[in-house]
Amino acid sequence: MPNSIHPNTQTPPTSHMSRRGLLRYAAVAGAAAAGAPLLSACGAGSADGKGGRDTVKLIHAAKDPLVLWAVTYLAEDQGFYKKEGLTVERVLLGGGPAALTGLLTKAGHVNLSAPGELLAAVGKGRRLKTLLAHTNSMPSLLVVSKAFAKRVGVTADSDLRDRRAALGKVKGARFGITAPGSQTDACTRLALKQAGADPVKDARIVPLQTASNSLAALANNQIDGFVAVPPVAEKAVIDMGAVPLLLNQTGEIAGGDRIQGMTMQARAEDVDANPELYRALVRADVRAMQSLVEDPAEAGALLRKTRFSQLDERIWTYAWGLVQKSWGSPLVSQDSLKAWFDNGLITGANAAEFPFDEVVDMRFVNEALKATGWKPSSAPV
Image (cartoon, rainbow, N blue to C red; front, side):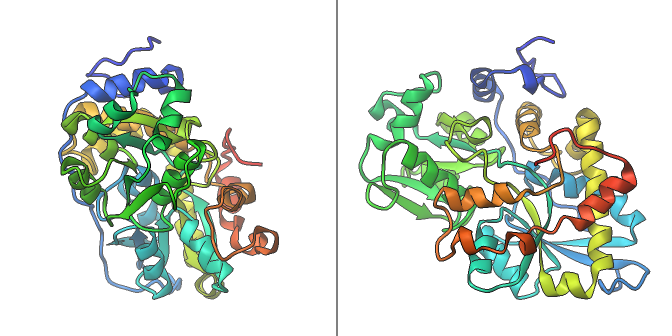
């Protein structure tokens, strides 16, 4: 299989593609339009687990459709939720903190988000669970403005050591995040630390709520860079000439590839009261993930049609190839949550006293894996 990607390629050979190849492809891929609206199926009934068609509210930690949620989109589009007697309503909230607040205030049955806010909340006494991994790591690209890159003398093709050090060369540089405690906040702080910079003293971290706001802020020279998941940062590269510096999922942000990515989160009291509902929800997602891992081309073609039809074809191809590096197993490991503590991303909680056994609840995933006979090759230890 060749290492280059033709613009018409449907599923790029990312397992053989270098970082430089990916970034060069992104730079010439073309502009991305806004993502297609989410297709919510809202039906009668409530999530009482007593049979019939249950409506389950899924909280998303963003207001735009993201490739990161391919598993849950596929579970709906391939009919796995329907087979479980479920219909879903998607509650779109801006950023991880807002999404967790939505879960705690019962705006939804589960929260689909990175676990940073959950870990902090559990440290303060909240009883929450992670039930499934939607991604095992977080595909994130850190980009900086063309002016900033020129100022520090770095390009996308610079040596990794130089690209890592670039963020520490300008005192007071401004970096946009969605919200404090979010995944974008975590990756930004890790990138600054590996550059020898103090995220508090040497930089300005600016909460902007949404990825769209980060794009606008970069365009208006209000920030020098930001971290985003596909396809937002790629849009900055293409439309604004932003310089892509670091890819998290390939280990270029030290420690960032180890931290747990997107998870399904729930209130412990709800899981205890209605285990059959959560069992059905997890079972549907596991089946969707299996289909995605075993046939990413078919899964991608469906999502392209149902969720991302307005996205430029070349950007979609790049983003879909990039995200393949971030999933493979529905299991959440305790180590992937502990990594949030080890990297100094959780305040007000002590990893040594943290109830990992209670928070990591993989019983429904293990049941689903046994029922399907699927043995993920990248299952965490």
